[in-house]
Image (cartoon, rainbow, N blue to C red; front, top):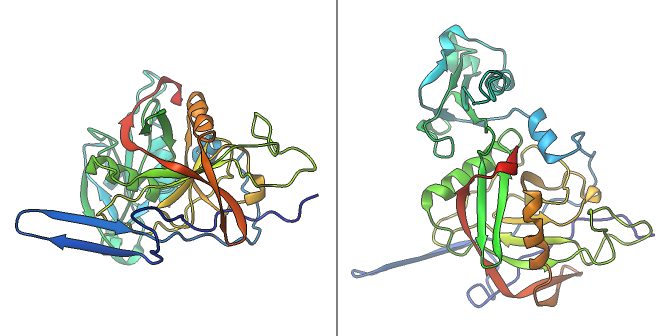
Amino acid sequence: MAGPPTPPLARRPSDARRRGRLLLFLIVLVAVSAAAAAALAYLSFPSAAPTPPPTASSTLQADADCCRGVEGLELWGPAVKWGSNHRLPSAAACCASCKAMCPHPEDGACRCDSWVFCGDERRCKDRLGECWLKKQKDVMAPAVIARGEDVMWTSGLVFGKGEGIVGLETNLGTLHIQLLPGCAPRSVDYFVELLGLRNCAGCRFYRAEGRGNVWDTKGDHEKNTAFGPPYALLQGTLEVDGVPFKDIAREACPSVKRGSIAWVGSGPEFLISLANHEEWKDAYTVFGHVLPEDMAIAEEMALLPVSTDLWSNVTVKVLRDPVYFKVKRSSHASSA
């Protein structure tokens, strides 16, 4: 039997633009006639120390059980329930109140897709416990009235059927990703920002490893085999060239299943799992999952030509030609 498994991701490879660069830095060259910018980020990794596994059986169930929001964020928009007449004990209860209206039992539509809660006793004062339930004009581009450490509100999103799906558009096809706002609201907030930029220059997959003989076609680990290499994953970056990336703090961590998409450390590096990695426990923040019918694209990517490399004494497979992608909003009938 193999020894205790550890998360296999060790460092980000160099390429023609990044070779020999070890630290995060931003270079901006400004001229009268033109401007060009490039931003690079180091890859940070979680501790390999084992932690108790999450109780959720899947990323979907985990998000159904989670109700979290972003502190220091006040979303705007038409109210479907006024907070002055709707006070609750916690942000989670406010989120659950919104979820109860999505979908609505009568017509299946989401009457509420965003919530705003005031839970800071010192700053909220007589507004403590106010829970505002709102309906956005566009839930993937929600109206923001205030953001920052001095904002006393906590806000979150709730996605209905066919909502909260982004596409990673590659030359091999589009990987549709269902985002999980209940588990990873800060991560979803970052994707909303990406969609607003309408640009993901530099976003790419650079590492690809199939399941080999370690996992079966369902992603289950074969008995009496090591946990890699290969490690059954795709790895890439979601950092936009020229736009500094702000580290995303650890969020709720459902276990890494086949199709899970998760940050490596605090981002912008991320992975898509091609197998069920219970051995990683909750070492990675899972913020979405690839729709099952698109996993064939991910498997195809894992078969592209690669070169081997050694990252912190771990053998990995790096794509000879990185696969670049665009991030676009999408919808899909199978997202429910």
